[in-house]
Length: 87
Image 1 (cartoon, helix red, strand yellow):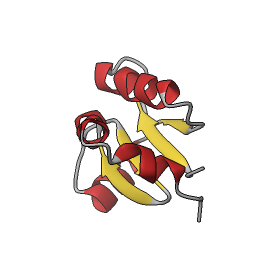
Image 2: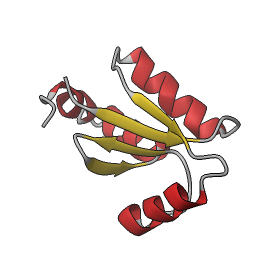
Image 3: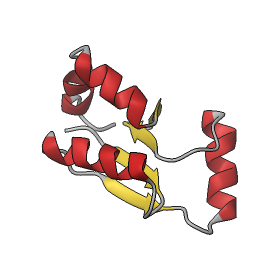
Image 4: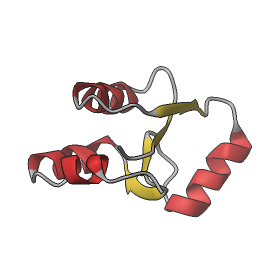
């Protein structure tokens, strides 16, 4: 099973949807709340080029946000990523 990390804030509706999608897939994930953590937010912006949450990483690779993983899921490409062994 892949190593999944999701950076979120508690009130973000896209964060809630992303966590629900991953939970529906039966995927264990590490949720990191970045509310008020400006250093972590700056790091995310540097790494992903984005300032929004959620930011989802699968096996250390930035996958984008909820819309991105939902699109992968619709194309049938999310499950293979989630099934890949953690590095």
